[in-house]
Length: 178
Image (cartoon, rainbow, N blue to C red; front, side, top):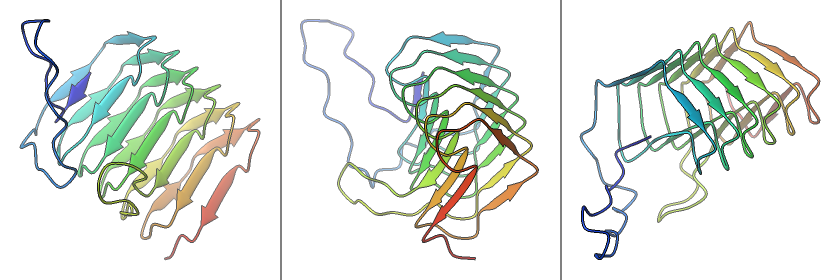
């Protein structure tokens, strides 16, 4: 499921559209993604290009090739009460995204971090931080990286999370201010 992403053409004979520039604002907002089973995709759920005020709640995501939930260059979204397992990257990844809430999720055996709050690393402008996000009450077990990681971002709140059995640190702050 991708919100804020260019849709494929209806006629498969036409090439897919070019990706919008990373500074574009999709205008996608106020959607709910609820009670879905999302298994074996490239990315489970992807919010991008300024999507905001969306609710991702009570979904089951598993065995996705990259992140279970990827919030990129988007704000004020809420990821709540999801089961995310077996992703080849972070269970939940925020890049260049502000004021999001990740609360009450179960993240199990994801190859990357359980929850990653970091900078953009692709698409036009790189190094955009993820500031003022709240990660609370998540159960993170058996991550391939850190349970919780904040990179080059500030004002984030990590509250009452349980990180166990990770191959990296339980919590890792790297150039994370305030």
